Length: 248
Length: 226
Image (cartoon, rainbow over all chains, first blue to last red):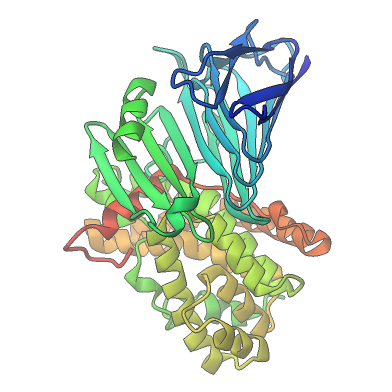
């Protein structure tokens, strides 16, 4: 199955954000929901209309935020990657673009790689200078009490025409060394929080490490952009979320 | 036939300061995740296929001479979100270029040293050094891939008092994977050189290596610099 969802956000001229484009098919149903903080921001929730992605599926979400628009995207539930009838990987591609003065918060629920599934995710973020971004990605290997699936994820951030983050992780059965002491060891959940905020130019963040129980996290200021990455690893999704929230 | 200059470059006694770095092994030992040669082998396999692959491709691309080393330096920055890792990599690059300028005098190395006195990422310098020594991009990839595991192995002999015979057996056990990683790195670097698309370079990373680097940088007492 192939499915594409598209969201475009632009200022509505009255201090709010309009969504001139809001389309999704197959498992990628989109709903405009009310933003908890109100203000001028719009919120869209991805509603999982059916189980996806399955092996062989190709899902894609494209988001563009125009200058002055503010958009938050959430999801109603976790995305569960499942093995399909076709023994092929599923692909899930996100393409997020924000213009100068625009703001995007991409805060979906975790992606869970169920046993036997193979998923390749790419998240490509393109920001103009002066754009704001808050992006959270959480990956959980296996449902509760289940062996992990395979999850390969690449996250890139282009800021003002320059690639300032390019990071790929390859986790789960078949990925070399993934559960060894260099990559994930005993953890089964991995998270990233990417923040790009023009004010970090004047007030740069300081790197720090935090261990909380069995979870560990680090705040990592990036080179070449007013941006930082939080990386966290934990035994499960619950402790992962807590560690991400604590270190920021 | 193999160019013996590769033996000189990859020799652990090459005076470029690599012996002071454990590649994350010191923090992994402290975390109790490396206790013996089996744990060391698992650590090395993970490091080789992540940071090792990425470094090998950068080195091969630099040795290929078709991409501006400063662009490769920025690509290395993007592939190292940890400031502690970026600092260690630049320090190692600075030490390597200092040695290389005497060992294999070369115009490209002089230019780079003049343009970036505060240091360029080590894999980029390694690639230019390999080219100055008359080595191929494939050689540069092999040297970088080998370095990604030889450092942690040597470090674990000191950190754990590991039997040096068993530690070296870990390296010997990785040779097939080393060849595979170096070959993949070389192919990716050739593609990046031909198309000018730096996204073709691998960006394989290991979450715990980033976490170890920041944790380790905060320690008051440590045996290794990184």
